[in-house]
Amino acid sequence: MWLSELLVGIWNNTAIMASITGIIVAQVIKVPIYFVPKRKWDASIMFTTGGMPSSHSAAVASLATVIGVRSGVESQAFALAVVFAVIVMYDAAGIRRHAGEQAIAINNLVARIGWFVDRSSASANHDDYQKKLKEMLGHRPIEVFIGTLLGILIGYFFAFH
Image (cartoon, rainbow, N blue to C red; front, side, top):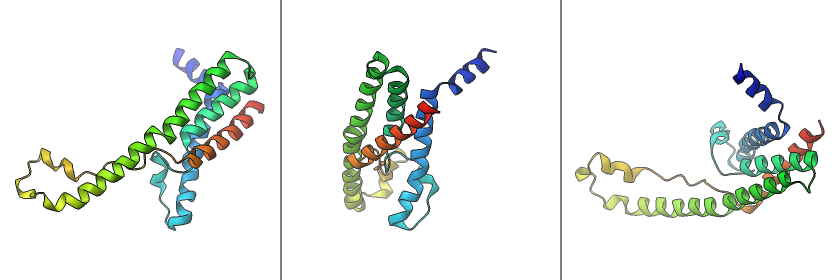
């Protein structure tokens, strides 16, 4: 019985539902945005990190917006949500983006020197050098900004409906 009450409580929590919707909408929007320059439909883009728009930013911005509208911008809950949002957005555009840039450099280096490695003497565990690091980890500032705008719109929609 407690599980059904928990699920109903989550379903009725406007802030949680706005955040989840922000993530889903941002991830789905990535597919047509990816299509425009590449001219290729790739639904797997929905399940990756990075890209336009930032789903992390959409989630935390919608959360903060719902809390701000419902509890007031002077509330401690809104202050907590804003600080949390700023940290998440800074991390997405800063630390995670730089980690992605380092992954690109490492992958390029491995591609350039890979032919020097004598594969015949490589052990089974040594084959890890062939694996590419994930490059699309973070976001450019514009991706965070657009994700934030999307999240604010979704937050307002949920807060008033």
